[in-house]
Each structure stands twice: as structure tokens, then as C-alpha cells.
Length: 107
Image (cartoon, rainbow, N blue to C red):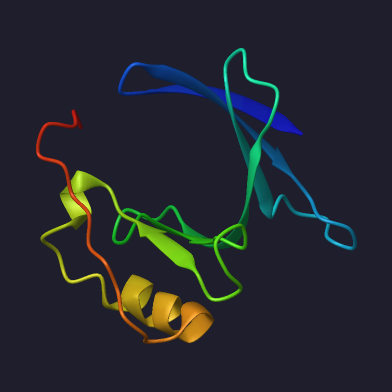
């Protein structure tokens, strides 16, 4: 189990990586606000840390069985992330997608 801490706007969030039953790799991530008593569980469906892509695909079962999130760093927003897009579509389907980007977020 690994615990990380990061800041999001004015909140501090702890993330804990864990392996689900039957797995020997960390494929679950729990998010919990510091001082909070509940956590949010997401499944890590795909993670690419190479310098070419750097993307992360979460399965968001707390929303629905088909909900996913694709996360790219700012440096990857204007690049052709064909591999990440393909993996996202393969694992999550090609239904309607919503794009969110906030220019005010620091790198």
C-alpha cells in the first residue's frame, strides 16, 4: 500500500494505492480529503508513464459501469495521444465524451 498527498485547489487529498483481490499489482486508488472520514474508489485501468504518452485511465464505477476518466499532463494536451485515446476507447467505449481543461491550474 502506498499513500500520496497532493493539493487540489484549496484542499489536501490523500491517495492510497492497493491491489484488488486476485491481483499482485496496485490497480485500485482511494482518494480521501485530509480530515475526511470517507474515500472515493477508482480502478486504475491503464497507466503509461513513458515520456511519449504519460496518460492514466480510471474506471469510475461510483458513477456507472461505463464511466471512465482519461488524464493527461498539460504537456500532452496538444500532442497526438493516439495510443492513450485508443486504450481509452477500447476499455471504456466510444460513447459521448466530455473534455475538461482549466487554464488556471499550475503545471
